[in-house]
Length: 338
View 1: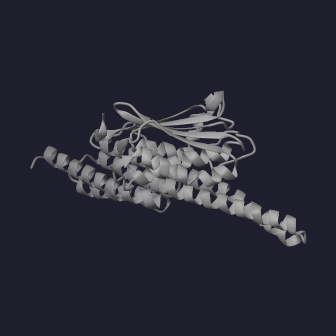
View 2 (view 1 turned 180 degrees about the vertical axis):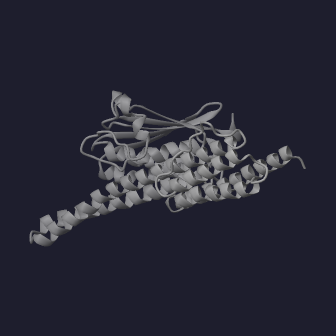
View 3 (view 1 turned 135 degrees about the vertical axis):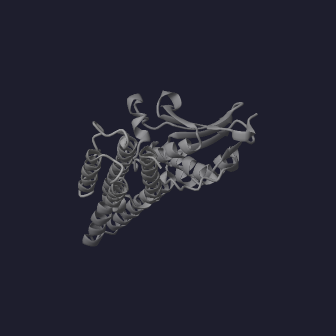
């Protein structure tokens, strides 16, 4: 075997080994990103050392020295925040390997930062209802006035409900954003699903003196979708509208279709969202100033994720009578195209 063929064989082996580890790491990262961040940087360093050993007799000494230096830099990066390896003056034989390594480091760093931000926001959001529970409990314990005590208990229940809702949304978003999310497509009647979900919110609407109306334009609209996630989506849209619509307001859930897609919209008479903030509130933990009422900042992010899974689109606009908010979701009909 010629020297050139040996070098080519070694390079192919190094790329295959590194790519194999990358695939394994991407699977692990989804569930244990923080724990494996250092490990995922050390493994390529070990692979590089192995490649150096293989190439000791067939690669010029200056190339081997460069690879040793590269391996050392990777190892140093594992001790703290991982840094990208400079690609200037990289020997052409290992340039693809270095480029792939930088892609992996950038991916891991981005996911780690997302996880860190997510945890920080979740902790902040949970702190509010927990602080409210503590405060109201202290008030209930310190007063002998039964009316004040009853009011404190009602506030405790509201705070517990808010914390419970937040945890449910955190779990839902975590599950929906996981790479191994089991997206099982099935035939779903969007009209029947909308009717089922809106019925679950009628009691809350009556309590808040809000008129909740369902307006399907067809008796049945069949689409190929994941029914569980669509139920979560409609639930979040209605809860969001009920949270911000004032007493005496109105909310309309409508469903319709054309030849290629189905659309579902929730329109309300709440405070609405300014046009320049509508894209922002689709991100996690982002809220618009909507008066005294406050949500978790996760509802619309969950909606956007579910719509994305279904290759649809979501649009925010003006609500009823020139005020409020309208959220419209468009989903492909799939094999049920008319």
